[in-house]
Image (cartoon, rainbow, N blue to C red; front, side, top):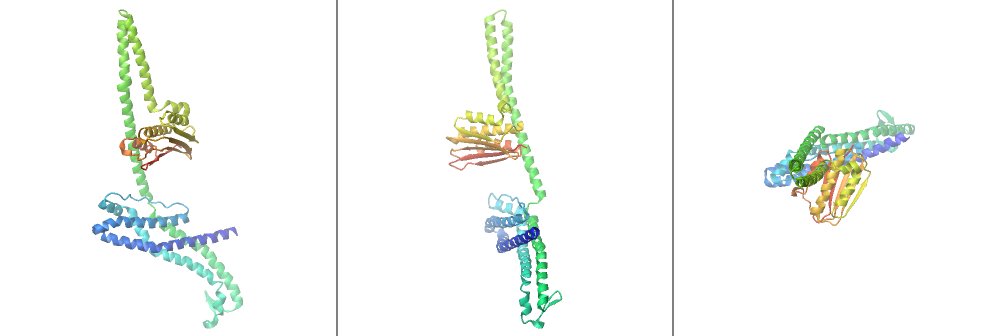
Length: 413
């Protein structure tokens, strides 16, 4: 009984999906007509101006078709479109060169035909189901020969009606419980085949994205190595050479002028302490020691405490993570708080760090003036490159007048 009820509900749902597809047909007619008109008129300047807007309309129509198909298939039907930007000619070139424009158009044109046919077939099943209980009326009516024939079986008496009606209803209901879901599945699969971005295109885009992030990671790594080399060469190495020279002079003067030698040795000792401090700073730039001592929660708390403006820091669900992820998260928070202190004119800021489902989420917000610009040398571009090297995501919301929120997601599995 449960299986029968489930199949009946599935048939009802399938009918609803088919009718939703039928409702899209008038919109598809409008979208196809507008696209054909603007495509033909794209030889003129006015047509080039209008074309991107018509393509956006067709993208919206196709999006409704994807939602209907995804609701039936139980998984999303996704597509990736080229971004429409630039001047009039550039926008027209983008929409006409995007393969999804033509896939959308093909689906819209096909749905104008298949939508009514599939909906009619679905409604026909329900019409056949309703015909069974009405069979006595048709037989009792003054028809020629006073009989109704079902597959050669004459229904011309009440006993035959009593036998034929239940059999007809059962047969149609059984067939409909299979036919209606099959029709809805066929429509959804056809929609997915036409409107979903092909897997080969996704893989190609993914390869291009990974190549880009790999290049950015290598560039960032090279820049970091050059910075460390420069810091060692210009700072620590120069100090060590100075220390060696002082100690050498002190060694030669030790017998002739012990007081001057003692002064040189004291200067060498002081310079040694400064060199050690500088080396610690260089090491901290590679992997902050506080991460090894206190982990990411302690490091974030320390960054918040050192910030010149009040910062409320919360860390939830974060335990020890891979060292590279911890270092990246630390530098992201450090750079973000530095930007807040230098550029935002904020009174307060918040830092929230959480980990769930092998994903580390960092959110840094402030109540400053907003309008953060990645191209203005604020370090945001560096944050984005650092995060991209881990295949993570960066989102910046900073409307003029604030507030500013930087959200970073780092895979940590």
